[in-house]
Image 1 (cartoon, rainbow, N blue to C red):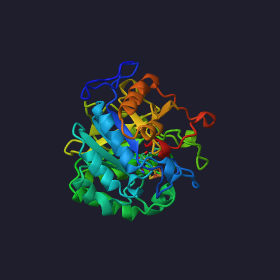
Image 2 (image 1 turned 90 degrees about the vertical axis):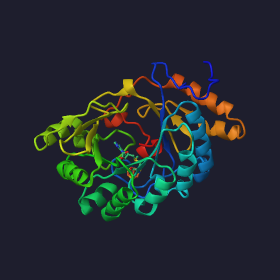
Image 3 (image 1 turned 135 degrees about the vertical axis):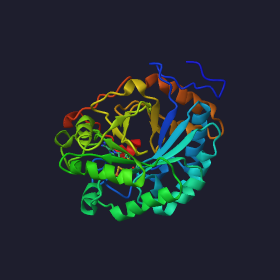
Length: 337
Ligand code: SAM
Ligand code: SF4
């Protein structure tokens, strides 16, 4: 494989002709919540020395942008539990050539950080919200305080973030009945909302994923009975499809990793908090970028080459299954959702 000489050309292309210009960077695997679909109650986290420093993450981001990456999303774990994450936002937010720096958060610390993040160059925020009932919210997140998250959502709106998106993972028998209320909440606050099918990542014993699975199609059919959903033509390059209700600017999306295969449009890779570049959420194909970063602290060429070479092992598609015997052992907080 040849390596790029011109840093501004989009050179991250895989064997299937897909250009990779979107990276999800997990800034920590730790979290103040223990959502039932994401983590076990009792989690062991990666020792801190194995997690990339914020400086290493900034360096990595600069190299990725020089390789044509246009969008970076900070995720986790819960990115806002990482000390000084606002420094990282300022560092990455200042990289010229990066079009968008986004964040996915559970919202628990947004009331404290929203304005600082906005000032630091963060473009957009996604906030997870699975229920508007405090007891149920606590059950689903095991530790979360709904009122605190609602304050965080308001803080993000007040800080001036545009197109804030709520993410709701819907489980049958748990929060399936709240879909209309969540949509009403989003419409009322002028937010977008996306409903996510649960993905089989990490072995959880709390519930049976096969039994609690609800397809996007079923959710959309149910919602169509109440609302006039008009499909939006715009494609996101990801697994989501969006609809709108006439008279409202909010978008209602459905993220369907199971029921709709979106792999042919895949434009992304993920980087774990330990610096492992994962080429596909549904496979273990990965490259250890931390080793390269630490072996060559003053020379970015080996890092650039490692990233370009990694494209050769990006799988064509995921093979998600609800069969408990075949689920990936990796948890979502490791991979950066
Ligand atoms: N802590 C932040 C949050 O919750 O938004 C960011 C990380 S979290 C892993 C990112 C997204 O992944 C969240 O919206 C969460 O609901 C979703 N998620 C976690 N586990 C999932 C699973 N097994 N299937 C589908 N979505 C999942
Ligand atoms: Fe934490 Fe987000 Fe996973 Fe919930 S989904 S446990 S908030 S990382």
